[in-house]
Amino acid sequence: MKRFTSFLLVLALLLGGEAFAAGEGVGFIPATGEDAADPFASAEPAASAAPEASPEAAQPASYVPTDVDPASVTYPVECEPEEYIVRAGLFYGSTALASANLQNFDGSGYMFGWYDKDGVFTAVGYTSQERITTFSDRNMYVKDSTYYDSMGPSGATSIGAYHVQTPDSYPTYQAALAAAGAYTSAFPAYINGEWRVRAGSYRSSGAASEAAASLGVPNGTVVGASNTCYTVAVTPTGTIIFEFDNGGDRFGIRPIGSEEPVTWHKGYKWAGGFEYKRNSSGSLVVINVVEIGDYTKGVIPYEIGTNWTEEGTKVGAVCASSYVVFNKNRHSAYGFDVCNTDHCQVYQGLNRATAQSNAYCDAVAGLAMFYDGKICDTVYHSTNGGYTEDAVNVWGVDYPYLKAVPDTYEDLDRAQYGRWSYTYTGEEIARVLNQKNYSIGTVTKAWVEKFTPAGNVYTVSFMDASGKKLSFSKEAARTILTSSSLGKGTRSQRYTISSGTVDIVAGESGTSISASTAQVIGADGSVQGLRNPGEVYVLTASGTDVLRSESTSGVFVVSGTGWGHNVGLSQWGSRGRAEAGWDYVSILEYYYTGAKVMNIQEVLGR
Ligand SMILES: [Zn+2]
Image (cartoon, rainbow, N blue to C red; front, side, top):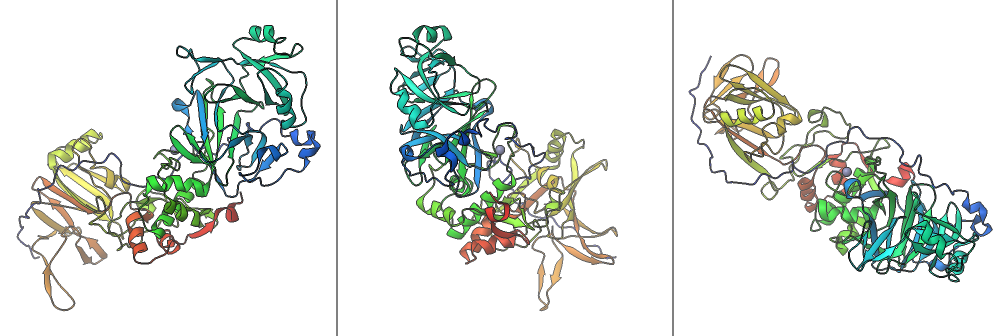
């Protein structure tokens, strides 16, 4: 039995005061507890029989371009999307809006109606107004284009929820629009499958009733403040131009006036249309209904940036598309697929999109990753530091397309946290573990107990002077040392632990050597020291075993490469491969083992 003397390593203590990012790296953890409920189960508009009511409507067009003259269309009309559609929640829960302003950016108006679950829009009316505001049918105020559902500021204009409805229904939207012109302050409305005319705007039914004669509707009916009705007004004036009440809980608006209309809403430019859903307090949940190619244009600037290579950007767009298809209905409780924050994917419309990033997104619009006919969960990370990891070794869930693959294309010197190193005292490690409710005294030994076949950490262990040992495996091996108060933490699952005094113990035999003084003999006879004593393997009777590095000095250096969870695609590896001439299909199919880039609608239908 040979025994080598131990050797004191020089510690790299020149670690700067690097800020610890709040995020745990880039990438997504698979959704759990997905709510499979169909949000449309009870929301189908009640007036689906309306087309039969009008002979002109018997042959709805399957596709109405957005640059059509809305006055030339016979309503109701179905407008089919050209691509798979995404419902992205913009305002919901505590951020639901009292009113929603829209301003057509390059178009000239809007169609009113509803979207079905596949994004087919049924239009029942239109306006050529470019600035419109939607709110629940209730008493409102407006001043300087801002709407209030309670008492507005001094000088605000009142918008009452009560109107006088004429006795007649009309065969077409245009007929109702023309009839409204004959009354004072009247507007068309689509109410339970019929086109009607409503006049006036009062804050109580009594006031509306008293005004009926002066409005020219002495035999009308007072209506208003329905809890299923939506009101549309001209933004600056508050003049009501349309009401929609279909007994259901959704109202849709589709922009028109140009080939690809863009709408301003709350400071952002959005492609596609909008869907509103009243919540129990009458505020509006705001949903952007957008074709998937346009959706990716609003994700790319925030998730990867607009300065990546063409193929690298296309990779990002296909991943973004795959993500939303995989996570369809993730927010079904609110009535949409994905939110627009980093909970799902950051999506902020077109403000930061460039002509070039848009062109790259267009080139891959409608494509996603499929494995065996099923959409892939295209998780990704910033860098893996040399080797990706099987999902089963990170999350404990086996995905056939999330397997470990080697990666030599990452520029770890340029990537944020491409290489990292943090020094802990044994007391600090104990404190971090104690804060996470694990009981252990000052740590005297810390070591990687087991590596995965890819060379990432599977189990990391800690021991105190009393011999108490704690072990953490898979994703916990990455997150357990992370401490925001210390500003330290492992950035990936690819790291080693060394310390002032290193003893290496092979297997269970107890053979101890100093890694720092050990040398290897190469095939050509050259002799050199070990570059990374934390990753030493030996051949044992039962196969290959990792040499464990244990520390007795009380100081530990945790060094690694990569940032993120190591599963799936590497953003920096993709970038490197793109720069080396790989196309986006080759890159995606390299990282997602056995998966294929395919057209979403061809695989899944609409
Ligand atoms: Zn979300």
